[in-house]
Amino acid sequence: MPLTTPVALLIVVVAGAALAIQAPINAALGRSLGSPIGAASVSFAVGLIVLITLTLVISGPQVFVRVGGTPGWQLLGGLLGAFYVSAVLWGVSTLGVLSVMAALMLGQLGAALILDGNGLLGLPVQALTPQRIAAVVLVAAGLVLSRL
Image (cartoon, rainbow, N blue to C red; front, side, top):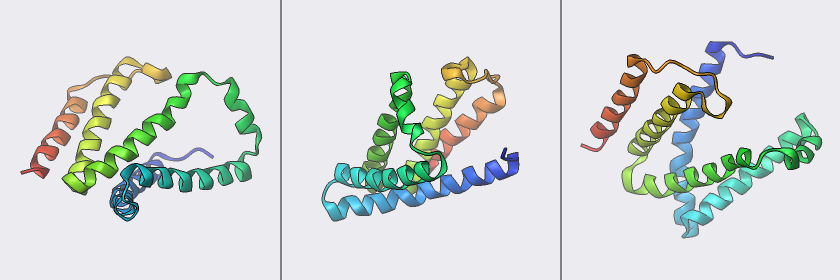
């Protein structure tokens, strides 16, 4: 079933809130385990169990069979996710949740401008407008303000 724009936006906003909540939870796990990388591993293991279960229930095991036929670059998302969780685990204790989230948004929006503007990775080209550039600049200003 296709999602309407307001529903999709709401889901993504809630996911953003979940990221902000996940950061200090994973940082606390890292302190409990004495290892940020260990905490990232445990976090991913829990997520993996949930996702495998959901995949089997919703789509069946044939999804996993198809992985062998996918281009290797499409599997880099897991590597990038591991880097993201590890970086947040490390950063939240040093910078705090607000600055980490602002820095994440800045990185995401900067990369998004490049991806959208060039239609990379199979995305449709989106115009690089002054408004979109201003959005990134405003997030950068927010990051600077969060550190003052």
